[in-house]
Length: 424
Image (cartoon, rainbow, N blue to C red; front, side, top):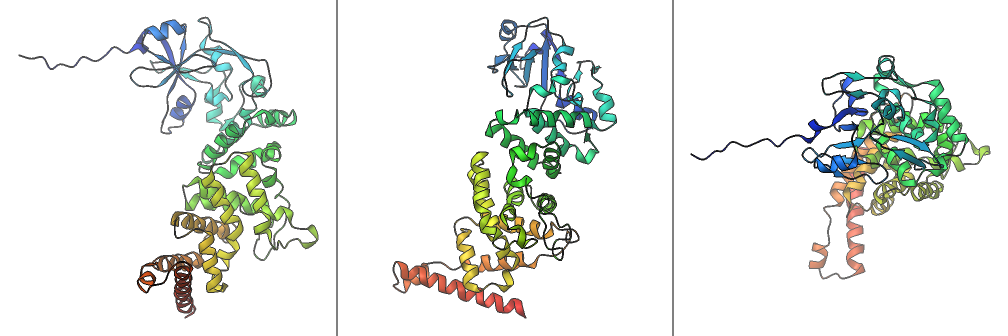
C-alpha cells in the first residue's frame, strides 16, 4: 500500500530566537491588516543562518530570506553614525546585540516594539502608550542621524491621520534640526520620490506635505510647491484664498476620485505657475498654466519622476483651464486640446486628465460636492470623435495629408454637433 503522507519540512525559525518587529506589531495593535512581516534574530550569526537554509540578501548588514515563507529575518544590530546622509553608518550585528539595543536604533516608538512567538510584547520605549495617545514620537536623540526619517515620519503622519495620530512637538523640532543642518541634501532623488509616492497612496497625502512644510523640509525638497502658500487667488472663485491651501484641497479631492498616484501627483503640481505671477497682478494669475510647465519639468527632473507621472502633470498644468471653460471653447480649440492630450493613442491619459481637472474644480472651500458637467461634455466629445477614422477617406481615394485634414474636419463637425446639443 503506497504511503501518500506528505511530511512538513522543519521550520528553521524554530531553531533561532526571533521576534516579529516594527510595522507588523504596530499595525497588529491598531487592528490594521498586516501585509509584510519582518523579524529580528538575536544570538545568531551569518554562518548559522546560512546553515539553516536562509538566503542572505543584505549587503550593508545581514538580512536573510526564510527558505519557505521568504519573509525577512535580520540579525539584531547596533548602528553608529560615521558620515552624513542616511547611508553613513557602521553596523554591529554580533551575537551579543540584544533585542532592546536593536529596537533603540529605530525611528519612532510605535515602530520600536517586538513580539515574541508566545504573544508577549517587548516595548522598552513605551510604544504602546504612544499608540494609545496617538502620538508619533522619536525613540532617541539618534533620530537626527538619519535624514530619511523626516520623510518617513511625514509619511506615517499621512498614513495614520485618520486614526488621530499627530507628530510630537519635540520630534517635529528634531525634524526641523535635520533640515537646518542641511542633511536633507544628502538624500538621493530616488529615496525622496519613493517616500513621496508612498505618501500619495495614503488616504490623507496632504498631511505628508503639510508636515514637511511645518518643519521647513518642503522648502528644501519641493520649493516650487512650498512657495504657493501665501499667494492669493480671487475670493469669488477661491474662498480659501491661499494657493497652497487650494493645492492641498485639490489633492484631497484627487484621493476621492482616483487611486492612481499619477492623478494625485498631477493634482499636486497643477498650479505651480501661480508662483511666477507678478505680485502687482495678484490675485489674478493670467497665463499661469504655461508658465508652470518649466517648474513641473524641474520637479520631475530633480526627483527623477517616472515619465508617465511627468506627462500627465504637464498636460494638467497646461490645459486645466481649457477643461474648466470647455463649454466656451471653439470646436477647433477642443480638437487641438484632444490632439495635445494624445486622445487617439492614449485615451487613459485623457481620462486621468479629466479626473485631475475635476479635483481642481472641487478643491475649493464650498465647492467640494459640486457637479462638473465639463468632464462629461468632454467625455462625450472624446467618445464620438474617436469613432472617426481614416478608413472611409481612404476608400474615397484620399492620401497623405488630405486624409488627416479630412479626419480633422469630420471631428470638428462632430464637436459642433455635440456643442449645439449641449446648449439646448
